[in-house]
Length: 634
Image (tube, rainbow, N blue to C red; front, side, top):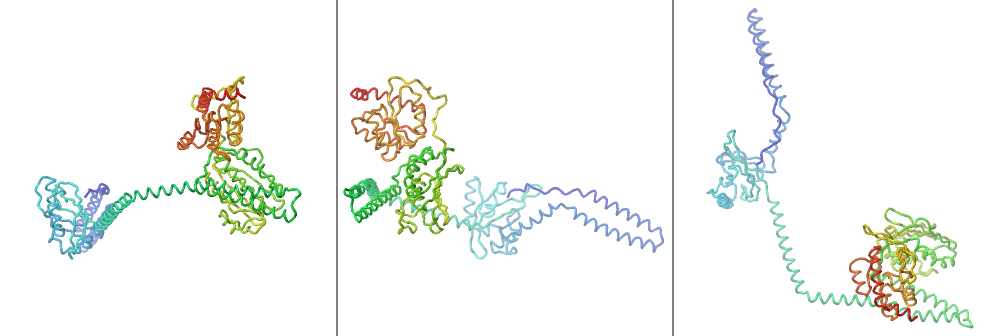
């Protein structure tokens, strides 16, 4: 047992108080002696009064002495009484021979003995497991290289030598039942450090033992389960491998189905829509009934084509086949494109369109093609479900680290029940029988695209006022060039007579502007640009550029698809094609190089790396000489 370090402060000296009271008593006694010079009756009366004063003085001294004791001492005494009388742990004190002298309330509760049953009668060894004491004596004998006899000596040997001793022991109750205990033993010494007894403080260890037993059981079961699982995995390894191959085959089949579905469904639809349009334009024109039938064919055909497109979009998203090229892009550029695309539909219905004016530029980190798809879907819905002569307002605003785009219409609005059912596939919110065509898939695709780009989408609507759809994307800064320490942009040079040609295929105007700035500083190069792969392939065949710089995620044909077409065409197969993409993870780079790209550069553009790669590609093109030969032939 550790000694208590926080000893209450020492009581103040009692000598001054004792001297004061002694002096007062002496004075009273002197007065009593002098009183005997008076007549007998007077002397007796005075002495009786002095006796009473002395008694009062003694009582006052004792009361004052008690009141002068520090509160800490009184508190310490109360704490000691509480500890000794606690029922939560046993306190057993013995004399030097180990015979029990004190047996507290906790010991009585734990062991079932009354203090009178054990005091001056038993030792702690008498209420402990005999075999454990024998084992402890043997262990201590081996540890301390001395002979220790079983009994009290084995319990207190270490404490006798001033060694802190805490051990586990099984106590035996009066009724013969047993329980595990944790026992701390301390030697009690007098002022000359002679051992006069021992103090054993014990706590019931049953609960901890139960927990340990349960934990051991759980560990055993876990080990058995792990062994069973390991055995099961090893046994079924061949079946798991076979199942994995089957799953991979199914995924490949699904991918092939999705890739071929567009062609397989569009081919017959092309014939239906084509011949229906020819019939509508026949000379002489069809009769009125025939014209109505043709209009129904065309209406159903265009609806079916839109439905096919949206279902394929949804299937591609859910199968994880949609690839995104997220980079810094200007929202205003996309909104201008969408405004031009949607204007005829709005004019046809008499809807006024309000877009943000050229002012504050909003840049977001997203896929430009998918953002345009989201905007077109929301704008189409805002026009379709608006009222005649209504308005659609598009707004952009910054919300912390995100940019919000809102599309507000002046239609009939949605109630709370309808809002709750939004973004459910094929749910048109009761518009199935209306004159407005729709598939009920567009909003689902829109929501999933926004979330794929790390954004959120929502709606606010009031019946009779209108509806506002909004989505938020991570804010970004304008695309910028990356310069290393000590690097600088090359100086703008005068154009040379013999310039080489770089074709850049990119749908993001901001990235086009960056590359234009870089190429403008090189007098040996001139730049051609294309905003999609179709135009890029046509320009490559026509102008035979020395090097082609290709974005990966392009609308329509991707950069990989364009690379395949260019390599298969004898007119362009010799041209080195470099990729420039925001897809910058190692697997993307590896995939690009495996596909046949001459180099794979990542955004943001690193000026030195870009210029070095461009020089290597130009050197490669010049070394092969194919471009010069073709230019000479032409």
